[in-house]
Length: 159
Image (cartoon, rainbow, N blue to C red; front, side, top):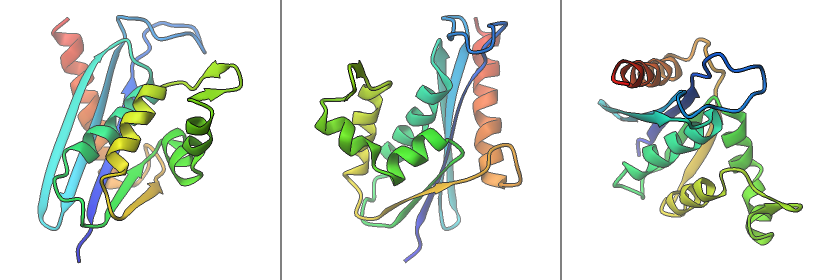
């Protein structure tokens, strides 16, 4: 059986903020997901202002998986986000869940999004997580990066 490939990426344009500074409400952010099944392809992308890169990385996977109707076909998720891939491959979320979405005394960042992602993940029979190098030679990773940048361009133009 052919598997479904889902390439995801998220980004933020942090305009003029100092290194390590927080995202401003005027900074455009976007996600993109490319769904591939055999000869069929579908590109999804959307964005908003004031979200972090990590927020959009998780959102890309949520939206990519949410768009899949068949849950009985093996799915390979590809992301350049170590945050997303490590959380899923190393199952960091298990401890977060056990601790009521806390790490020590602090709430896990993006806890609501992680919960949404896990709801999507639970729908699938066979899901594999794959880390790809960002901004490198992976054609489909470059395609989702270009799509989210187009979305951020549109957000900025329509401000």
